[in-house]
Length: 204
Ligand code: PRP
Image (tube, rainbow, N blue to C red; front, side):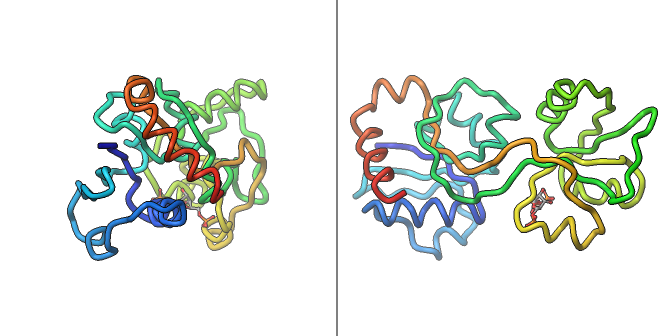
């Protein structure tokens, strides 16, 4: 039995569609839309754990899930001790710096973000000293109401930036979702994991 941690929401739908194309039976939409957090498909030999995207690497690192689907953004931010097996190519977006178009460098520039480690290492590399302000969502609000001059966040369609009068100032990294594995599971359940990997590789 393989246990797979899935990020609830849009990424999970895209990931499950890939699994389905790879020949794996996936749960009924009704079950995925319910409040159930553990969904089993015993006849196919796997169980899904439906978790928050930011928590997927934690479940996998601790080995309660053998595999997981996690965004490269989350993996970069957390640097968890897991194997990154495959780029699923789904949910493409970029990690970007953004701000108001008339943004001016400040003596004590502040950057708001859900990704403090990524932001810190990016600005360090740029040789720029900034104060990182850690938020948990709706980060685009920060420059609009004056909490920070710039943000580091995910940009997908760019709609959130546009609708809040912000522009992209720089790209830090391209982001897609990855299949990750617990290191012990990869050894103990190598055959089953490899089979899934091969099937997914064929449809990507
Ligand atoms: C993400 C991200 C941006 C938005 C970008 O937020 O943090 O805010 O999507 O998408 P867009 O370029 O297509 O507009 P999410 O929806 O995860 O919500 P959050 O801001 O509360 O984290």
